[in-house]
Image 1: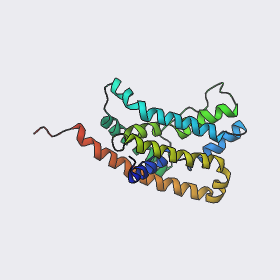
Image 2: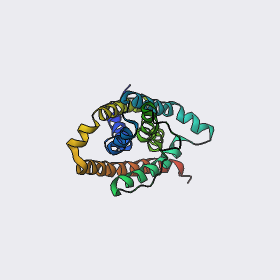
Image 3: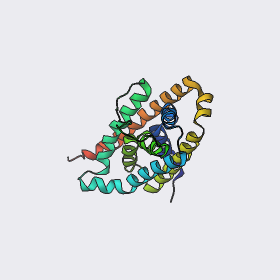
Image 4: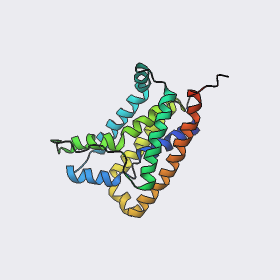
Length: 201
């Protein structure tokens, strides 16, 4: 039922997109504003978002007349630009994480912006839907669960990880996964674009 090789590939792709290690500065910023964060709450909410899109995302696409492979091609562009952000240290996607009047309740901050969009952002959701063209739902689900284990550990040990890796270590790790993600984006594009233009000769 489960393919360990496929789970491993899906895990690495989601790990690179979620980029929880690279998100440590944002996590520290959120905790500074809220006073503290709730790792379990943030993890469960973000996992709920991911699993929901894994199982009903394809149905949503069918309602608007889009097939999974078309979405995978579109998703490859999103991954491409996320990878450029990681490699070049630039900001292409602007997300409003400080809406006027947002409560400073740590429980609220653990959901917005921590669970969404820091952990389960647009890039993550797009990736999960795109992966449906390459992997089974069961394998993607396990990959999500494994990533959530990593997420909750990082949230619990944020300060220790930051001290251990240091600023330079975080940057190097982010760029390394950016290069991997760039290669994944190219592979996802190449593997699905041909299905959109079948040979009619």
